[in-house]
Length: 466
Image 1 (cartoon, rainbow, N blue to C red):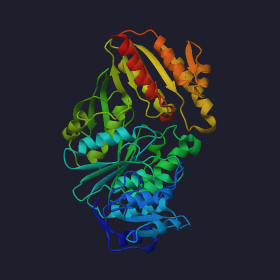
Image 2 (image 1 turned 45 degrees about the horizontal axis):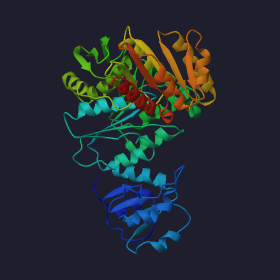
Image 3 (image 1 turned 30 degrees about the horizontal axis):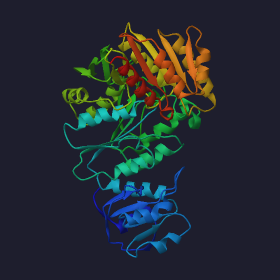
Image 4 (image 1 turned 180 degrees about the horizontal axis):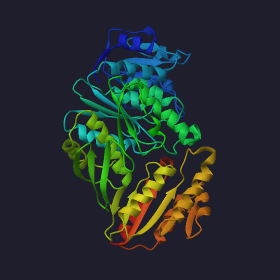
């Protein structure tokens, strides 16, 4: 972060200056008293499981030079050094976003991309970073820093030597994408797809669509938007305030296309088409859905003037993020695939299809956990997933959780193991016959922690072959 004066913060957040030095230069922003550094400002954020106001003194003791708080209490002031600057706001979470918005405006020349969608946000982001890095220094938000806390904190990492910035935006509440988009004011907006995510809040894919599409309203007027023409809802967007539109698709007409897709166990080959130009690409990410992610990233890069050869270089040097089709192969050639970063009905089906297409002739075994945040129709979506699995060439199915019981009920043509207990599931996996043709896919919502069972099962198989 580049330094700024406390008076700039006060102006940006509309706060009340209590005490301190308004000309003091602040070197960073933090919400965590455990990791705060000298001369940073501490925002006392009130979360679901903690209240940052309880850690104000600890933050100051560790070097915080200023504090932004919102609670109607000031008893903590007596315990702070007189040199500490204090600013009071109505809501520290809103204030954090307002400061990020003001800070973002300082970097008008940084080419900024905002990405949202039900599936593929992170992978598309990382592909773009790999492409952009060839031409200039690129910033992106890491891990799950894609919400109202994480995105502002990521924006504060902008500096004058950065040429490209790529931010993914997640949402679980109505209006969240608008708030994040208004902070970012991107040059490019990308919606990867609209699926069955966060239905607990948005009820249906149409509700998800209405939430996501507001991203395009915040794109700069001289910017452009990227649309997935394979998505029926996104395809309805025929104009966006005069902004240029670049489309991509696997199955229908679009500006950017892929042909001759060959799915293998260790790679994916395809040809990327744009207008009259084409380039052959081999990437380490597997699955047809990852080709769609490449098309989304390529469309953005093309809009910025990148050549197909430059895009090819970036894609071929891209490494998939953790827990996205992450693969381990045991000494006995048993394949374990960890795609347990998150799950919804569309992403689970796509992952299963990707494995079936990449490991033709192998014994495909599914280890699935609950898909969360699906609202009142959760039982229905889990049951429908079972019907889908029943129609596929699957060797075995192991299920974990409350809602996957409905998946089990739909599985009429095969035996299936179900448990609500992770230890019982691991024990069942330990008893499962395996050979060099065995492939196991682990997929569930993040809170199910299926990646822990994945790691333990891998260790069990390795010990077995010693």
